[in-house]
Amino acid sequence: MRVQWTETLDRLSARSLRRELRRFDRAGPVITAKGQRLINLASNNYLGLADDPRLIAAAKEALELYGLGASASPLVCGHLEAHERLEAGLASFKGTEAALVFSSGYATNVGVLSALATPRDAIFLDALVHASLHDGARLSGAEVRRYRHADVDDLRRLLRASSKRGARIVVTDGVFSMDGDLAPLPELVELCEELDALLVVDDAHGTGVIGPGGRGTAAHFGIEDRVPVQIGTLSKALGLQGGFVVGSEALIRFIVNRARAFIYSTAISPALAAAALCALKVVEGEPWRRQAAREHRRRLSDGLREKGYEVKGDPLAPMLLVMIGEAEQALKLAVDLENAGVFAPAIRPPTVPQGTSRIRLAPMATHSSEQIAQALDAFPNGL
Ligand code: PMP
Image (cartoon, rainbow, N blue to C red):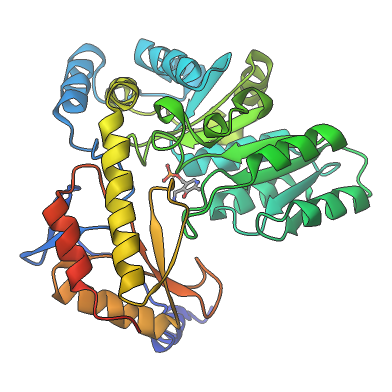
């Protein structure tokens, strides 16, 4: 076999699309890379909980009680009291009958979609859903159709034209991470109810940040009881690691029996489960975190527009996108920002379409106003 790894990497470099792992010290509002302190606008740790002392204390207590690893997949003997308590907490937080925790958000999406759909069914994906939803849809063997981003009329047309006799499953993100907009959930709910399709919402970026009590995008629209399958992750606003799905008892029992990513993978560390339960309480009890992150976002957005940049994203979303265009230009701006003390990486194809490379900014509740002002100053006047 001729190995083409190096050629492939060279090709990626030539197109400014190569990615490299870098080492950082820790996941705070300021990070250090090669000894340089950088204001960190790159994380999904929106509420600043990844190193919150209360979460750390909850994890330490659980370490003593349960040990470090869950030691088996949940259906064998890895489902411990800490997991059960977290699942009850997630169901209550989201206002559903039941919840189930997976080892990551990625695994949840792959597991849930490949469990829900079969080759007799059809899955309709918003064109901009996260890669893991594409992977899960493909793995299910169902017919996969993409509808234009957030375009309910296009979805209606595709649903009506579908010749599949099995289930029809519509899949969207709640908040689109690389565009910062919200899915039109009320219209999607109406359409799915009208045409008897099952709606699946991955609210990885809405959970903890949007809606009353941070309960997510469906709660923001007041339609949480009309979204039958809601997915989320512990890895973003909750600051940890792991994913989850919430819904009816029947749905969760079905997923337990059918999602291979759940069945054949070790349960998350009980320490993480205990910390996640603590994170849910902090999310509900400290609305100032959501407000602070949103205020930082607003300042960045207003300031960058004043500087002449095209900025995308809903004011309620935790991130904003500075639209640049070519990957090379976006990469250059990211390097300039880093030299000025700000870490905000360029988002390039294949994560986003060709010609729409951008800088993604995700301020944290725990940034200071001075840090946000410094970040704004680091941007040169508009391109
Ligand atoms: N869904 C969405 C919309 C995401 O942005 C991500 C993370 N990039 C995931 C799922 C995967 O979550 P995790 O990092 O917990 O695997």
